[in-house]
Length: 315
Image (cartoon, rainbow, N blue to C red; front, side, top):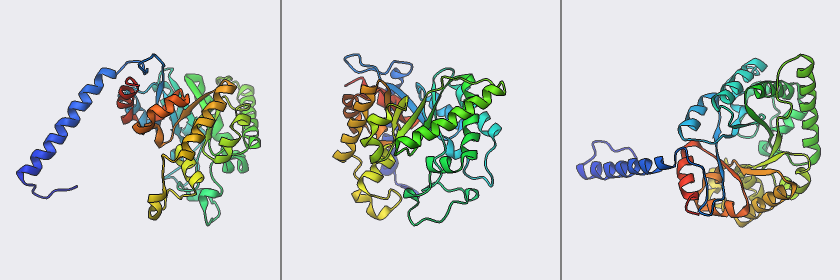
């Protein structure tokens, strides 16, 4: 709300709200630098979602224990041409070095749907959310994919990097993507370019198909991260860009909760870790539900971290 020449009682009310907010922030400072743990001692890792190298400052300011989602597609947006390998490498390395050994999960580009770049020359689609996007672009245009993978692997020499593929719906997609990663590793080794050969490869779980075969995908992936934004869209058949159907977007729908539980269970059975990196990760109303489901990591917007830590301490 914007108040023009507000009256005294309005100013007093807003000042009171501001003071309450500042008091709340001071109260959260006691959780800075502390381990995130429940009352009974179960530890949870709280990571930050970022969209650029500049965002790492906010992640550190809010005491993130790592970067759970580096949205690499933002390096491709607002440009007239593909970002070079060196440009991407410089950005990835900046984040990796700033996090000083803490985990940094970099997602391969998720261009398409609501994130468009004209120079990709993607075909016009009636429903781009169901069309050529994310891993589908990478597998059909491997030269773009391999350039990005080279930059990611090069940055892995400077810290704790993991690579994550978005929009995986079938096992063959993951297997094919891993083949390109293997090619890149071989090329870098032949060129004597340093990288971490043991860089983990994981996937986003954001389609109902991926949930239902998560037991099979867990045999090929080293970790899962649940993307609740797209998972909600595809499960409920609601376009999250369509404001007219907002009342039908139920992020707490029982189907979504069951899918999160199933994915987490299959990850646990396979011995791999599972996190949430979608908006629901920062939904305080579901924090206890997620912990009871067995999630070990939550990746959220940086400003949610300290309050989330304080709430977990009460569970």
